[in-house]
Amino acid sequence: MNLKDYIASGIIESYVMGLASESERAEFEQMCAEYPALVAERRKFEESLEHYAAEHPVQPPSEVKVKVLEAIGNTDSRSTSFNSTKIITMENAKSSGNAGWMRFIAAASVILVIVMAAMYYHVSEQNKTIIEQNKDLSSTNDRLKERLDTTQNTLDRIVQQQSVVSDPNALVVNMVGTTVAPRSSANIYWDSANTSVYLVVKNMPKLASDKQYQLWALIDGKPKDLGVFDATDEKVILKMKNTQKAQAFAITIENKGGSPSPDLKRLQSMGKTMVTQ
Amino acid sequence: MALKERNNQAFGFLYDNYAGALYSIIRQIITGNDELASDVLQEVFINIWRKIETYDQTKGRLFTWMLNIARNASIDTLRSKSYQNSQKNQELPDNVYKGVANQTTQLNVDNIGLKKVLEKLKPEHRVLVELAYFKGFTHEEIAEMMAIPLGTVKTRIRNALLQLREYLK
Image (cartoon, rainbow over all chains, first blue to last red; front, side, top):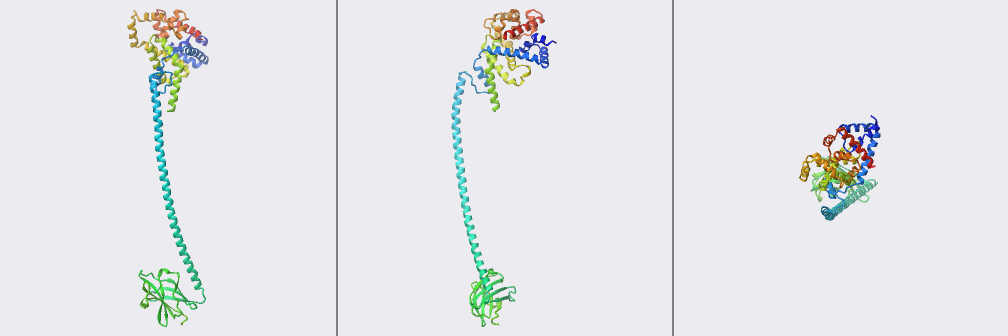
């Protein structure tokens, strides 16, 4: 088929205006797929038809647009109509706008209160924590100070012990266990020059809380009280009472606080001074 | 949600641009009943909204597609029983075809849009385009109605449309 003749047959106009039969339509669409020139011609007629229609409009009643937009679910009608529906919509929109603003303020207030409460809670919690931490710190500080004191004491004693032990005038008396307490042992450092007596517990069994060890100096067969000590004073040098004389030293178990005279049945440890020997 | 809003906005734009042209073609088909014509316009735009996905760009321009929806809806309304009954109360023609032919000759008074262009056509051409395009009769119906061969109806209508095209330029 000659394309020019086909175009001149009026098929384009018939097709575009919806007057072509089913078979004519199918044929035309087939031809359009093959011939771009035919599509261009069709387009030209469509444009002139559209142009003419656009130039000769008939203004429809304005409520048609409102109804159409309502029907397709669009309540936003910006048409030029002044019908009552629109006025009511405007009023609703305005009042709902105020309600929206009020709701916003109410919501903002609630949020503000919540935020302030949360902040107060947070700050007070923080404060509590700080106080707790402070307490902890001060108790830690106390403990540290205590420990430092203890350490200082221990150090002092060690220094003292060292000075006693290294003192050329000191007499070392090795106290050995008796049959009652074979493993008991202690050292006596006796400085005969200044009569000072020091005791170092090496291994003394623990006693009941109402008992204490007591050190005695035996002078001419008579015991002299040199003071009490505990087994927990282990490995620490203890300053005992002075004595100018001593042929021997003895350790007994006595009631807490010590006894005026030793219970020799409970003699735990004994050592003789070499001076007297 | 935003997409839907944008679609609605676009549709509002579409309405603003084409409602006048489509209302014109509806008014040319449904004559003397503005209320019914605006009802049809409303129905047409709702249909356009619903069927927009079926629009095929390769088969023609959007306006052509919408124009045909408007024309078909108008003719369907014209042929509906309720419309026919309302017309019968006004006049009782001997037969439908003669009545249509009489109507056609009376339409010269308030012609608008394409019908104004139709006035420039020769009367025998104009009547055929009237019956085919504005009344929706098939070529066969027109051939029977006018007592002329089908081939002649087809040729005359096509020639009329070609002339119409010239007048549109």
